[in-house]
View 1 (cartoon, one colour):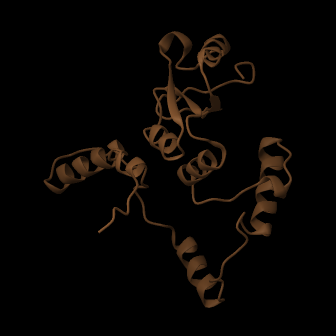
View 2: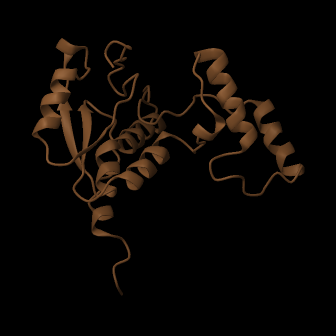
View 3: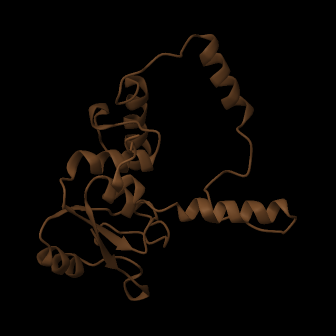
Length: 189
């Protein structure tokens, strides 16, 4: 039988987050008092008003595909929220609704990376970034950070690294950073 799974998918290592979650869950099941920092799972049930809204949506037959970018009404509401609460002006056409950051980042990298493109990742980093880059045929390039720069990359560091690379394509920059909590200011950017 031919191989179905690609070699690059086979090269992806199991998620350290899920491994930590499984270990903590096992310890909890054995009665050990543990705070599980594995998966970012809420420690409360979905509120009743949200459950009821989901049930009502099913009763109203709101069970069909929506626009690929997200429902126009939702994208409009997001644009209004960004303007009202964040003083950011975006058109609903500039907004894409997705099931989460992991899916969005994976899709974006797949859309913009060609084989061998370098994906710059400040370290420490969220554990999924290297695998996401590899699945998109990108090459992860790590930019070390430490306490001396408040765990942020500097413009000088970025310029030096980019100048030394063959095919720099993407800089993954999240703020606040996961896992360090570093926040980039406007002047940093």
